[in-house]
Image 1 (cartoon, rainbow, N blue to C red):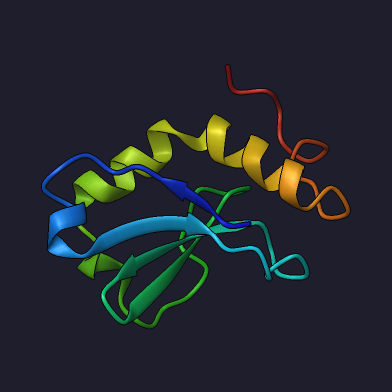
Image 2: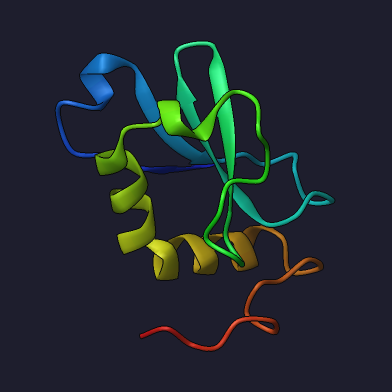
Length: 95
């Protein structure tokens, strides 16, 4: 089952979402930022965007800040969903 990070308003009403999808176990650990039909992958290990297209500059700073402020939660969710591809063994505890 996918995990959805609850973004504060006004972002959900503008079509923005942040999810860890449930069929991405072989990919680098990431959260997918969605805005209607567009998607960006944000690396949960490095804290950077994985792709150049669509342009990461199109993601509002507030959305990226919300994801960064919830990295511990997102990393735990990823590790729980994909124990065969964990983040915890490669990242120091950031709490």
